[in-house]
Length: 133
Image 1 (cartoon, rainbow, N blue to C red):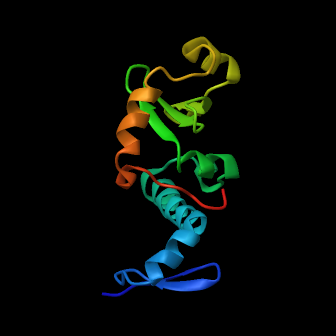
Image 2 (image 1 turned 90 degrees about the vertical axis):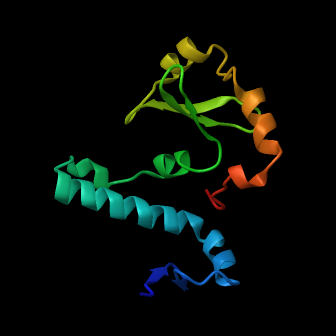
């Protein structure tokens, strides 16, 4: 079954991976929003989650794209700058304050960044970007 999704200015056909998939990457913020909206709607209507999930602010959307890392030692999701600086962090669904980030990461530098950065620089297949965010 072929499903069509209207995303902003263009209609995409899901299983076709020709030049249309390049257009899809230019609309990645819209795709990310669509995916989020679908999951949030399911969680609220089917699983009883709080309706606050249906409202997504732009910072949260940006958080899920390029620069996202999981700190297994502390159990935090990190939004990293290109130099490894911790821009934002969350523990589960709770955003951490600047003070909490400084307490855990010192000068806001994630100690494993150079290791991860070296692995990622060898293969572009591990990285993703959200143009326009």
